[in-house]
View 1 (cartoon, one colour):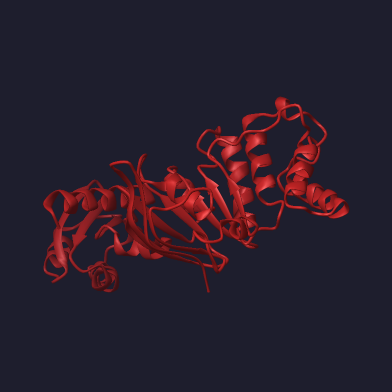
View 2 (cartoon, helix red, strand yellow):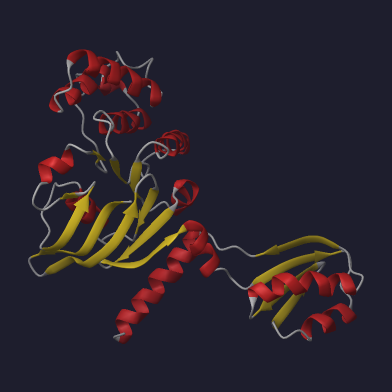
Length: 314
């Protein structure tokens, strides 16, 4: 079931078109990576989805609710963590969560129970009584996640939640998100592509206010896989090279010591036949793999291709 639906979403600031007709659908109980270069429109889109800004046009539904016509009802069903969360530093972490619970009109006993659960979930149980002003950046970010969950939301919007953290803080926050996605839909905006590849099921790549691509992580890698095989052999003979070059899927090759790199024009056929060719030549393999692109490589490829299409008027 779709938990988020965007249809021709547009947002204009004066003469600037921040969003130019964004379309995507997100299924419930998944983790979406919302990617794009700076200025692509990610934060603008998230603020509209969260009911914090009005679009210039288009339709948006979150948890089955029309965001444009009923933003307050949407806000009751979502959690939201801004890119740079702001806290009352004179409050303790526990006091802040109780304050947020009061905004959602949670009864006192339920609020205290929920605050305690979230402090434990985010690893802040021991720091719950301490003033927020003494928290580290990673602790504040985890407290931000805790407040975004106080109302048990159906959808959790996280805008660049790890961009300013050190490696330890990033790891801690990503572990929390990994656990959360089993219970709620997570909409995770980031420009740290390695983080998205670790925890997301699907990505939407935004470029110049438009969706360049929406795809599952596995499908994205498969569709953009480089048709190159790396084969490490105990010995590379002329007979083996001639046999490989005779295949219909062969394009080119390179030899570097014991490493044979083969470029092909048909990945699936080469997967089946390249090992057979090597075995039939009596060669011994110590390594065999298809080069797998990183999400960063795919991102750059998609964004550059999209930019070329716009430049060429396609």
